[in-house]
Image (cartoon, rainbow, N blue to C red; front, side):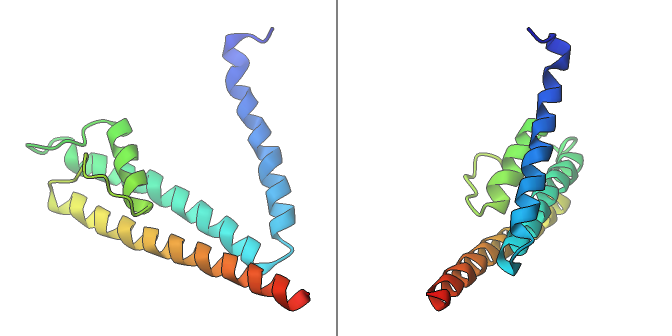
Length: 126
């Protein structure tokens, strides 16, 4: 049985998955776009969560005060869901929200365009 301290090393298996996805996605433009968009969205969520946490943590009436809340809010915002359970109350936090909304719309548009391009390529091939 593995030592509990070594369990995080299991995450290294993700590297193999990323390499496989990179090889298969490198064959066509739509796959590369999806990989880049997913990476950009992940970075945007992480940075947006940190930025809103920094802006909101000390604000009066703030409901985004932990990194968990910030990550939840950033994920909901970038996926254009926006549950409304967490929201920024400062101007800086709201500006971060606007940027994440734009990134979210761009992600959805890029995914739809990539899937459409892939489908049209398959139809033309047949």
